[in-house]
Each structure stands twice: as structure tokens, then as C-alpha cells.
Length: 261
Image 1 (cartoon, rainbow, N blue to C red):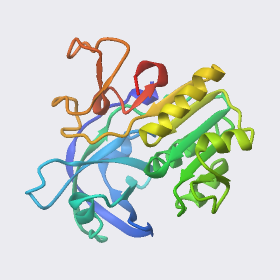
Image 2 (spheres, one colour):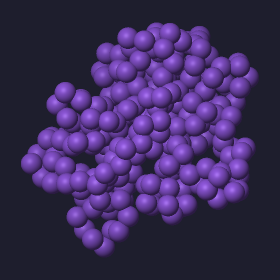
Image 3 (cartoon, one colour):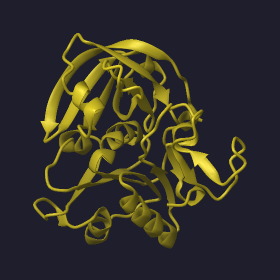
Image 4 (cartoon, rainbow, N blue to C red):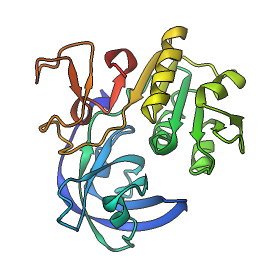
């Protein structure tokens, strides 16, 4: 199954380009062997050059160019690690491991609703690109106020926007936009902050729609060994024998009914 590819390798990759695309939001293209096996919904771990920062930063994959052997990541500066990343320039080395985790299970022929909130929007770009020739794609993107990646999203589906301040599109949440714009589909794919995912899960369950959610979590090892990024699950994890799933290893994508939010 395409969504369950989980190849791991650590390497010194190369920065191809980097630009600031919003307040504190950066887009970086990387030349890496990880591009050959990556799928929508997976992530890479980025290691800092500052060795006082021991843990890598997990960053979702925004776009994949297998022909060129490149990946695009779009991230927000939230601490010292991402602050360091924002200083990288074309030609710089970047130590990464990936692709990691399980991607979205792509349902061919099913009308798709892709929902992204905040920095959960970037993974929707590659997913929309992957699905556009397999299904009708509708995308609902939720922002606080400032927009980013809208051109890429529009290129691969019908885009609906929600903003907290009402400056663009529907004022309110992604669920408000879905209701206002009468967005309907057969399967939902979502990535964003936990409150958004809770609302999306409740909406999908009420409508009887399959829903896949990508959980956002601070990860440590990125390969499932340290158990730092667990979430509550309905079934027992064979690794720990408790009702937990490791987001980095078992996810980050889950069927909504598999996990408790």
C-alpha cells in the first residue's frame, strides 16, 4: 500500500533554495535520496548544526519531485532549531533522516476533501497533487490571517479558505467553511492542530465519512524507539501492550476512529 512505505536513512542532503513565504514561514527545497521513496503525508527529521540541540526537528513534506530528486518542506520558525534552519542558503549541507512515518492512504475515485490548518496546510499540497488525476479534489485551508501556498493548492483542486479574522473567505474555522460552502465528499484527509482535528473527526463521524488525520506532535527519535510521541488509541499497541500508538512510527496518519484526541 502506497501510504505505508517507511524507508529510513540518515544523510547529508543539499539545500537547493530557501525563501520566506510568510511571517516566520519558510519554504526550502532539498536535494535528497529520500525523494525517491517519499509519499504524501510522510515527514523528515532535520538535525541541527548546533550540537547543543540534540533532537532533530520533524518537518512535514510539502512537495516531492522524484524526477529531480528533491523535496520541499514548508515550516514555521517556533524555536532555536527552526530559527537555525531559516538561515540555510542554497548550497548548504543539511543533515536529515527520512522519509519517516506512514503517509495518507489515497482512495482513487472517491471525492476527496483535504483539510489543512496552519502549518498543517503544507502536506495537503503534495496530497492534492497526488490525488488530482485519481479523484475530484476539494481543499479547505484554515489560516489565522496571512495566507501561504494558495497558488499551489489552487493548481491541484478547488480551494476554499477560512480565516479567523474574516479577511479572506469564510470567517471562522474550516468546519464553518465546509458548511458555508456546502463542501461534500467521500473521504476526508486532514492535518492541523488538535482542536481542528477533533472538530473534523466529529464532523466526519456524524456524516459517516471516512476520515484520515495526520497528528502534529513534537517527536524525539522519529523512528518509534523512544515512545515520546504517543497518543491514545482504541486498540493495544503490540510494542507497548497499552492503548497507545507512536505517532512517528504508527502515524502520523491514522484513521480518525483509531485514535483518541
